[in-house]
Length: 496
Image (cartoon, rainbow, N blue to C red):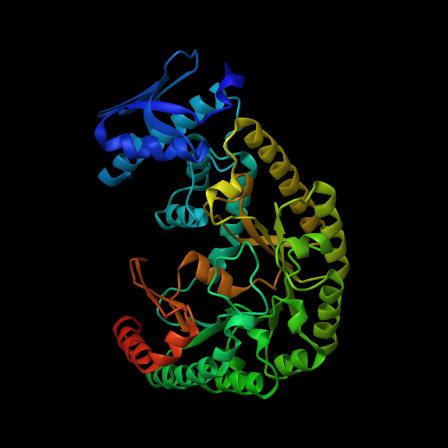
């Protein structure tokens, strides 16, 4: 029967209270992205509440597999009405995953029922509420269904991150500068990044508008006495800017954002072909503490397949330039799950990158823009992907830790390879404070440039996002309106 079902999408008939229908449907789709919900196999969910707790039952028709639990832990006096409501849905999700993975012989996600981008924020919220470590471990295991390896990873990362949090969320702040141009566009990319071949004529106008935004916003922040903890120049690939234009950009950042007094100054140099010794020297002389050189893979055939216009030899050369110039911290981005790559290909990449001795390594699991390119429709392909992903993840974690690097931030994405995660590793003392604050949203980030998204964090940790236009031409044309709107938000959210 299982073999026959592999030939076509699975279909389910959901039977539950209307308030839980979307929860059931979305949970099934995390396991079977092409599942249908017209007719098909009956799946029944009961959820009952009493003073003592929540009883949940999941029944799949024509199956010996069923799941039932009576949750009494939720009756603890520390829980709110909102907690009870949320717990009912959490129990339903866990029950569905338990039943369906057993019935269809799938391994549950190592992340259990957690599907959000920032699982660490959940743990931080527990610590904020005064939950004990024992209670948090119980919740991760018994309510959220995380594997022990992910429980340990989360707690390790969170323990490091909490050392970087401040009492206030509006001062100090982080600064992000977006330069939305790249030499070419990688085939997996979903960022605001425009290839120079088609959009290079927009660079001059964009840079002049960016200079203006830096001056105007920088003056206001100085006037208001807002301290800057970190400056992060990203994109795109900011190092497509060379020579005098780069010198001027860095000088403005130093003048208006007091980079010399900040904790961190990072510039993304992600595409190694954009780095030469002169550029690295300009960065170092301007006080840049940290750069990112991103091989993604050290296999040249894969680089061609994914649209990266560089070779592994250029990665090695870029590292040599950066170290010769005296840049103190270098990050390397890698991607596991790239099309056509095997476990031995990944092992080769790890070995070659290890020889370069980066201070940070950020390991991404491939996240495709369309589900059809990420997860296939047949169960057999799901089995194969899970097995490969788990092996790649374990190999990577073991190797990176053997280099003396420890995890300090992580996040997940929709449509991510094998239900894995993205992890930033660092030698102790070289963690990126910007990455931590940006991901955990415990600090306001004022963002300038193309496609840059500012985050104004409120005292209750809710936030307002404000985005600059992605298109460089639109950004340049509307720069006065952009500056005026951002000044209003800064006065509203950063002045207490």
